[in-house]
Image 1 (cartoon, rainbow over the protein chains, first blue to last red):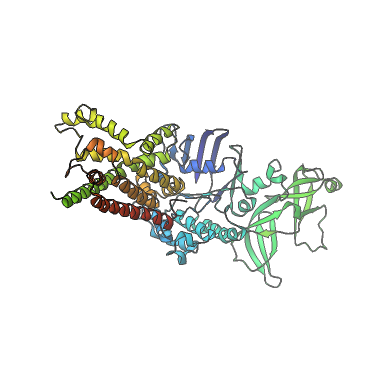
Image 2 (cartoon, chains in turn green, blue):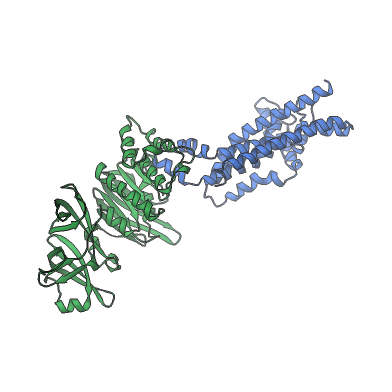
Length: 355
Length: 227
C-alpha cells in the first residue's frame, strides 16, 4: 500500500495540514490526542470530506487533486466507523450484502464468506441490528466493510465505543484479519494499547499535522517523542516462536538480538508474535548476573539517555538490532556511569505476549 | 342531479383532489425536503419560511393571489392561453395547483424532519459500500424515512380534504366540477338543510380522525423518525 497525501482543511479554529508518504504493508496506526485531526484525515482519504483541498494518491492512483475528485463510492476502500452504524432497515445479512451486491463484474462471494467466518458472525445473519450487542454490531460492521474486497481498509477508532471486555472480544479478530488476508489497514486510535498490539507502522498526529511517521518499534523507543514520557512507556518487539520447553512450559521467542523465554502454552513454531516490554520493568546491571530469578537478560549498548521527570531517566538501549527502552532513577544512572556507548546488561522482569 | 348525487359527486371530487394533490406534493415535496434537510446554505430559513406560510396565512389570501396568478390576466393564466389552453381559474387543475401550495408544509415538514433524523452517517456508510448518490437515496434514505412519508401523505391528504377558502377563491362552486365537500356543507347550512350538513360533516370528521389516528399510531410503532 502506498499513500501520498498533501491535504489541507480550515474549519473555524481547526486547521488540518497533512503531508504524508507511507509505503507499508500491514496496519498503519494514526495516533494522537482527541481533536488532532486523525478522523478528518481518514475521512478525507475515504472522500467523505469534500471541503478538504490538496492531492491524494493511493497505490499510484490519483483520488484527488486540483482537477479531480474520485467520489467515495468509486474508491476501493472499506470503512469502519467508530459506531457500528448498521442499516436499521436491513437485517444482518442485508447489511453484509449491501456492498457486495454493488460490486461490478464477478463479485467475490468468498470475500463475504471469509469475513463472516473470520469475525464469527455466521449465527447472527438472520438477526436485526437492534438485537445485537455492541461488540457483535461492530463485528458485523467490520465484515460488511470487508465484503466489498477493499484494497485498503480504513478504521476509525472501531473499539472506542466499546467496554474493555468487548474490545478484547474484537482485537483478536482484527489481528487475524491482518494475518489471514494481508489487507493493508489505516487504523485511527488514541489508545496506546491498541497501537502496541496491532500496528506495524505509526503515524503520529498533533494539532492537525503529521508529526512523525515510522515503524512502531522505532517510534515507541524514541526518547524525543511524548510517547516515551508517559508513565507506561514501552517497547514493542517482533519475535518468532523458535521452540518450547515442555518441562517448564516455556516458549522460546527469537528476535534480532536474542531470545525471550516466556511462560505459557506452547505456540506453533515459526509463528510471528509481538512482545510488549514496559520501560519500568527493565533493570540495568554492569555485570551479567548469574544467580538471579530473571530469565531474560540481554547484553545491550546504551544509545541515548534523557531525563523524564526530576528523579528518573529514560535509557534507550540497543540489543542487537532491536531498540529497547528502560526507565531507571537518575541516581542509578549516575551510580552505573551510564552514557552513550556503554555496555550494560538489561534484565527484563516481565514481558507481555500481545498476540 | 338529486341532492344525494350532488353530495356524492362533491365527495368524489374532494377525494380525487386530495389524492392528486398528495401525489403531486410527494413528488415535488420530497426533493425540497431532502434539500432543506441536507443543505448548509445559510439562507435556508427563507425557503423554510415560505414553505410554512400556508400554516399561518388565511386561506383566502393564498386563494386571492393564486386567482390573480392563474386568471386570464395573470402570468400563469396567460402562459396557459398562449399554449392553447384556457386560464386555470375555476377549473379542477387550478384547484390542484392551489391545494399543492396550501398543503405544502404538511408534506414537506414531516419529510424534512424524517430526512434530518436519519443524519449523514447511514448515507456515508452506503457511499463507502459503493452506492452512488441516487442509489443511497433510494436504498437508504427512503426506507429509513418510510414513516415520514406515511405521515406526510396522510397529513397532506387530510389537510386537502378540509380545504375551503382557497377552493372558494380559485375554484368557485361549480357542482360536478369544482364543488368540494366542505363547500357543499356550507351550501347545505346556508339553505338550512341541517340533516344533510350533519351527514357529510360527521363523515368528514370521522374520516379525518381515522387518518390522524393512523399517523399517530404509526409514529408510535416505528421509532425511526423520532430518533
